[in-house]
Length: 473
Ligand code: GLN
Image 1: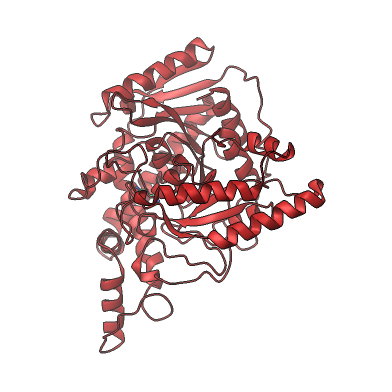
Image 2: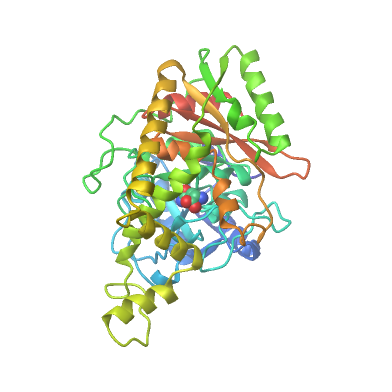
């Protein structure tokens, strides 16, 4: 049987028919068998085996001493720091760099006996929608046919999809957890901004970045979130809001008020099969007794331009730390300090990262700041106000996750704008800081998966997860 549900794994362990060691060894075989997909940048083979052995022994001695995640084997995106393990952000500029500390989110999982089986590929510094911007080559969607897995947490999604681990930690700045989850038929959860500490997460755009999960089930997303969430003395932007018992999921759901945007469903970029399936989904919600209302949302087409102005601006300052001086790659042949900066960055960063640093520097430069950065900030505020207003009357906003299914590798590389536009439905949650979850909705005629997205008001993850679970998708 496929062990893709943590509750079933736990009950098999309790019944004595499964151990962490057996799980690790099965996953290691799956990793070996899927090497062609280029999922892992590093597999922690010996360490995972050793930790599983120790945990199994601890369990044999005293089952009551186990953490809540005993039996949960995860992969981590290459932007999450794990002490004494390399972290490169999918970039050559950090090749060989070892984390000096562990990200708070990951530490909380380790404290509950999670096992990390390896570090997975991603778009360089989490910039991308297809996992094609990694310095370590593209990751391939396990559905086959040379399809991208989505990005930037593309390999996180494939690691779960290909059953090389049970869950993966990714990061979501503009959709990077939800979009690959949708392209791979999985659940992608991005919590409220600040719900999970960003300490130990390589920064891309700090006012957007959030750690999220890719799992097979809503219950696993809820459990991981419950353990990772909460204040952190190392991240002053981490929310002080009470962490609810997200993993206590209700079985009965009262009728809800649900909004959707016709402008989103009828957007010219929208694939016909995804549109039909999304509208059918809304019909089903109505039949199940929920109130479903179509709203006018005129700001849809402003989301992407504002998002790319703001995130590139933040990225241009965040990435200035990679200067070839303090850590990471340094060009071997340099004449002086200026040359060190220039050559190290020229050789260390990939094309997309350079494009964004240049764009971000431009929109922040004097003379252009007001026209671009300042304007985009205003758009962000407008979108946030409009979104907050919707939540005064509605419980959820339903959106597709993506306008299309996964494209073929190489199809959008010549046209970065086409890839940016594919983020149209995911960036609203990051622009406004609200939680959003991507759920698998179906497959198209070519058997390619796509998802549906639910968004809710800030800090209402428990309610969102309850509702998501009740849909049985
Ligand atoms: N595709 C978006 C971007 O390239 C989202 C990336 C992300 O969420 N990390 O910025």
